[in-house]
Image (cartoon, rainbow over the protein chains, first blue to last red):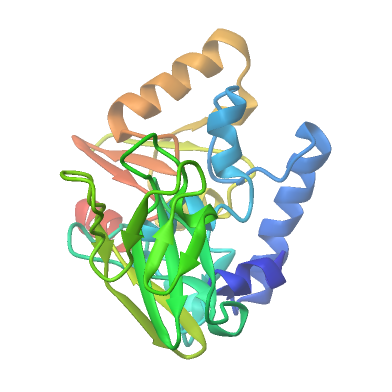
Length: 196
Length: 81
């Protein structure tokens, strides 16, 4: 579980006893239900909804957790947190304001890569051209194709469905009224961040 | 002031909240949602969704205020602990 979380910018909490307690709960839940659902939330019975609370649930709440600096149950804390046990009492997501969200290890995102990343309810196409990163809305405005699964040609993301081209620097396309949103990116401590 | 704790038996913050209230000798009504079954469980989940806007635990009701998560500071303030 932890190697996957590390890719999302999280590690296990420093409080080993607490981690053992959460994992023990998750094992009980696994035995009962067949999957490692979050011990702090209830399942709805709708598989499409419940998949969002399978541990580690970080991508589905990445914007909220980036502000909280930990996941809901505290099993995982952000890699830049000094002492995760100090976050036990912190539970309210600070309202409003942008969230700088770690989305990939820098080492796993070489130049020329175009990929979809999930940040909470949003899907974002992340591109690397040389040493520069660009983040844009993942959904092509033509037929809703997934831009992050398309092709990168210079500074253009090409939709995999019908070849519409979007400039990753500003989200513009040749088709009037069909530009996509862009988001600020940053690179720090071996991670790529997108601010939403 | 009336205190009510909605929790799950599997949730570490719910256990922490329980210990905290017990240590402060606070009287409270406890609903462990995953211990319930059938209609009773559905009703409890619906109530938690209604008052907290979600189904994340613990949910602690102190008087008129609904606290989502184990917010020790806020509970202390409200209960003068």
